[in-house]
Image 1 (cartoon, each protein chain N blue to C red):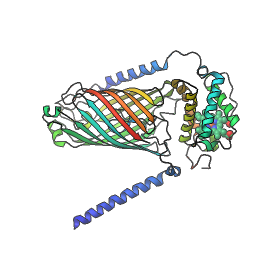
Image 2: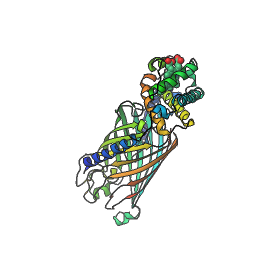
Image 3: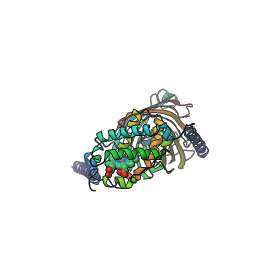
Image 4: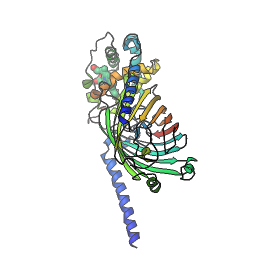
Length: 303
Length: 154
Ligand code: HEM
């Protein structure tokens, strides 16, 4: 009986909270935003893509741009699916993200790391899979990286990614200190329009091993490390961009060295609603398996 | 964890890429590349024509003197791109103050200009050099706060 009551009131609380949140969003919206969804007020490609942990960015690095095509007067949102197929492993990500008034970005992604046949060799069992939830939030601080073409001032944002891995026991066995962790980052992004060039630099404070797939902190180091993530993209037309990225990583675990990641990508944006990204990606050494290189493919749908 | 040497290497590569892109040999000014007065006139006509058909912004031009606007836009682009013109019109703040323009209107106008330049066969990278000169004007053209409707009192 108590339980039923507790459940009932829990449901009611959740329901009321959801209603209140919805109402707050609608009322706090600028009056004109309510009858104009989707707005799609940004220029094509200037909303960026979605990076591998679900935040607005390139493929590997979060950028300072707020995802979605909503300007300061509107909300934008998208869903994406990404597959990274390297020599021994496959990392798949599904996620959704919203951009609020070109100021705040909230994202969620679920990552599945499939060890395939290598899982057995590693003693995990064939087809062993790690998965993790990534909850992201980003706040744009200052700068307009797209339109302020008369200054060098980039757009700057801070963000965090709270990650929860579902394989606590195995993570402990390989030397990781925790099955969850928070990354903090600051990103600076600038479009050099006269050069058709977009540059991004991100510094991430992290304890994550292989972005959290192999847990957080380790028997070699359990401290936060500053890591650098750089992206450069050249716009070839309104619907095609090519670029490259580099992401440094910590090296916290004794059992396996961890290497930096890099990629070279091409993105096609036939409309503001769709983007397709294909990349060559090199993830270096993962869980004692060297030369993890392969293909990155991502599809994004939204407004 | 060689984060910083890698960071500096990455920055070096990015700067190199930027320099290479910024420095292709060019004949004359952007004004010449856009076809001088004749080319700019066609681009501006195409842009205004599209703006007047665009449901996102066409109402804004209800009270405007379109002939005058065309002429002034052409002269403004001419001056900006290094051509031998003089711009006799109003400043951007004064010209757009009563229109209550939001970021989406500004970007819609940019898209009409892009479409007009596409129609004139202006190469994409040349287009972006003109857009880079216009983009900062958003600070004067877009209203500090968005109103319910463009043209309406806030
Ligand atoms: C980079 C963007 C823009 C540039 C370079 C630009 C340039 C100009 C120029 C040179 C004039 C003439 C000034 C004068 O009357 O003395 C003008 C007027 C005008 N512009 Fe813009 N403009 C831009 C964006 C926009 C946008 C986004 C809209 C509306 C959606 C707009 C609507 C108008 C209207 C309606 C007038 C006529 C005002 C009047 O006759 O009183 N403009 N603009």
